[in-house]
Amino acid sequence: MHLVDYATIFMEIKNLSEKREKALGYLMGRAQRTMAIRFQKCFDDAGLDITKEHWILLVNLWIKDGQNQQELANNVFKDKASITRTLSVMERKNLLVRVEDNQDRRNKRIYLTQKGKDLKEVTFPIIWNLHQEALEDIPEEDVETCSRVLTKIYENLALPKEKTVEGATLENKTIKENQ
Image 1 (cartoon, rainbow, N blue to C red):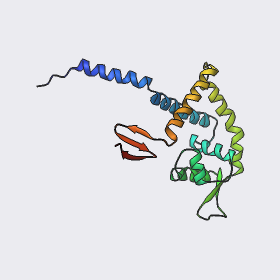
Image 2 (cartoon, one colour; image 1 turned 90 degrees about the vertical axis):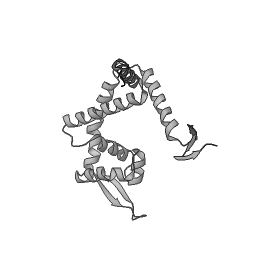
Image 3 (cartoon, one colour; image 1 turned 45 degrees about the horizontal axis):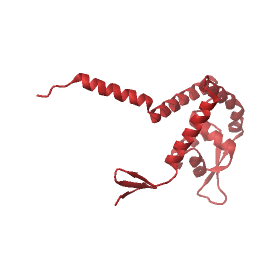
């Protein structure tokens, strides 16, 4: 019969919890989820019938109206299929229209309606205030350092390069045996 050492199990769980609270991935995810929740609350409080996902697509269309769906998906780091439903909802809300591309009939160009364009002036002050609240009491140099670190993490993980992991080489998502 094996005796369970509950004190040891409890200490292991506590150690894992403490490590998690310091893990960069956990902290980034927690901050991102909190921002997403607050984004939505701000939009809801302002009586806006949009989501954070809508707003992100709107911003990209304010930057460059008339993108095709693949360009837009690439710009928001999602696949084409995953934004299709969101675009359909936004089209039903009269925020945008999808128009057949004259040069390639398989593609649709996405254009803002006047209602979609008008949301820029309404949402920017809301988002600016939220960002100011999020950065309250954080020195500018800390914000700059955080921005540099997050950019470097992105570059390290997003740009294709060869990495060796426990005897396997990972290159462009292809696993090869290390010899």
